[in-house]
Every structure is written in C-alpha cells, then in structure tokens.
Image (tube, rainbow, N blue to C red; front, side, top):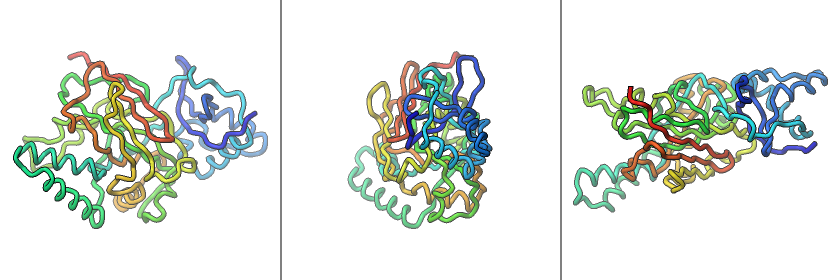
Length: 333
C-alpha cells in the first residue's frame, strides 16, 4: 500500500460502462466511490463521489479527505491504460480569455500590418505593438467571451473537422477549474477559488470570427468557437495544491510531431488571478466552471497552416499531462 503525495482527478469508464470520477496516481485509477468506503467506516463521507462536478461542488469538504486518504496509501487501483478517459469535468459555464499572451498578440499585429503593406517597417511595427501590450498589461482589462459546454470532447477523442470550415486553428490553453463560488473577489484572493488546472484546446474557425454582414457587432464567437468537438479537454484536473505557480508552466502544442506552440504561461498579459478578479466583478463563478486563459503564439494563422484531415494534435502543459486528438473530416452532409 503505497502513499501518494500528488495526484490528479478525472472521469473514466470501462468498455460500455458508466462514467465515474477517479483519482489518478501514477498509472492507476482509484474510483472515488472506492475511496469513500473506508472513509464511511471511520464516520466520514465524501459528499461528491458521484461525479467530478459533484466533487468540485463539495471541494472544500472533499479534497482534504481525498488527500488524506492518498497520503495514507491507496491500493487496488485499476490500470489507467485499461480505461477510457473522458473530459475530466462537465462545466456549467466556460469563460475564455482572448488575446492574452504578449508575443501572440504582437505577432498578430505585425502579421496583419505586413499583410496590408509588405513594405512596412517590421521592426517599427513590432516596437509599437510591444508598447501597446505593455500599456494594456498596466492599465487595461482582460477580454473574455463565453464558450459552449457542448463543444467539449475528451482528451483522446477524434476531432471531427467540420466540412464547411476552411480554417480550423489550434489554440492550446491553460484552464483553471473553479472549486469555490466567486463573486467580486480580488486578485490577491482569486486563486483560493481555484480547485485545479487542466488543458484545453480552444479550436477556432478563423474565417468565421468576423461577420462581414454586421461588422459593427464585432466578433462572432458562436460560429467561430462553439461547434461540436471544438474544445478537447483534459486529460485530468490536477489540484492547485500540486501545481505551484500557474504563471510558471510550459505550454506546448505539436502538430504531427512538429512543435508549433512552445511558451511559458509567464507570457500572459493578465495572469489567472487577474482574469478571475475581472470575471467575478461581472458574473458569479460556480464550482466546476472553466476559465480558459488564452493561447500563446504559434497558432495556425501565424504559419498559414490550418487543421486538416489526418492531422494529430498533441497538447501538453508541464505537470498537467498530455492530450492527443486525431483529426478526421466530417462527411459532407
């Protein structure tokens, strides 16, 4: 019976069986219902053993019990390789921070300027863009829009590329998972409301972002971001207690084995705490909600290369694991 110091949490199933929440330690999974049985014999009880969302609803009560059980030692786990791994949580709400990495936004500004005028002074354009981002970080606010829970797929599911989307693009992101309701919290206390972190690939249909028929209405995130499969999530939720500083994580996306995105979360314009502060000033964050924190430079737009049938997307964040999604074309309807 080995003690486990760090662990992750997720949602799993056996072949054809129902989904269940489990604790991941090494290459084994321990169902929360099995962890709960010995707790009951001691007069204790998990209140959220039915699902990962239920666990997050009861995070302050349940996490200390799960952590204590893991530290005392767990046995009789199921091999992870024998289970299907689903998206780790089914959130009520999804919030997405856009244009939130310095280098990414600067690259977009420079690429756009050069596309409009090939004779423009690239260095001068970059210098102006860098100054704009520095000022935004000091005195600006995050830009946040909402996502659709129905867009979520599992971390190893196939991503079906819609037949009517011409420019599907990857955007790997760190996602904070809320574990305590938050309303009007300060940046200084915001991370106390985070249960853990996971990986999200916030796929975008680039040609659908802008609506030429109603340009005054701004960006169309419904059409561009919310199609089924546009949010591969997971593999697991790693508790914040085991992650450390969320602004010191390496985020990497590979396309068919070639590294396209490779950046530190330190490059965020607004950190996780500031985003949560901003969000909670407008809405109430609920347990299980996802807060996506933006994507670093290296998107397909920068390379002029978009997702195609047969591609494999592999996204990793240090300490949080790796997701891997094969891309297949949707049959034309």
